[in-house]
Length: 253
Ligand SMILES: NC(=O)c1ccc[n+]([C@@H]2O[C@H](COP(=O)([O-])OP(=O)(O)OC[C@H]3O[C@@H](n4cnc5c(N)ncnc54)[C@H](OP(=O)(O)O)[C@@H]3O)[C@@H](O)[C@H]2O)c1
Image (cartoon, rainbow, N blue to C red):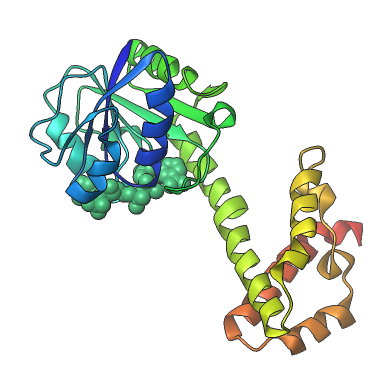
């Protein structure tokens, strides 16, 4: 049985807690955070504490606080010889101030109240020694079938890629929703298109799957789209993305 302590009470901490609490080979012995009110939701299977100076003994400490606070929180674990791992895609292994450092990064988007099926979540693990790496792999395997050893440089690039495919596309969904609402239309009308686009790239490369006026260089359609946009940021985005698509496909035109 692997004993773990989760540090942090946010989106990822909540999801990891829920999942690990159901895993046979893992015991979440404690959850530590700053906010006593938030900590209450972790009290069913674990002890809770808002004192970072009173962290319980465990095999692995999983730091799930905001990226900028990882180093600071890891300092409370400087003297342990157990594994201290953070969960960020963007932060290097060396941000951890402890002897046995690790990264335990789940490549998925998490919010507190939306349950996630961890079995399909890719886990990117890294550590500064073989024994810690093996333990982190065992921990990840207890909840996921997709566990990868990925170093800090690779992970940072992967995280950047994730920002493009997730955060940026989601922002574009919100622009689409805004444009629909301006005409009194439901965003639901666009959902089959969104689903088909996501489904298509399961079997073909996104570059191959690209369609639309910029891909075809349909100048009149693009001009009329620009006439329909009011907001400066939407016009800038439309021009920038159309230009990038045109450049990526200019050889085919
Ligand atoms: N959410 C995701 O989709 C996702 C996916 C993969 C990896 N991650 C990684 O998971 C980690 C947590 O992200 P999240 O989305 O769960 O964030 P979140 O919901 O915003 O929660 C952040 C947590 O950090 C705590 N915190 C902030 N500053 C602190 C400090 N100085 N000392 C102690 N605790 C501090 C907050 O405590 P208070 O409530 O007291 O402010 C809160 O518990 C990040 O490293 C992130 O990169 C997140």
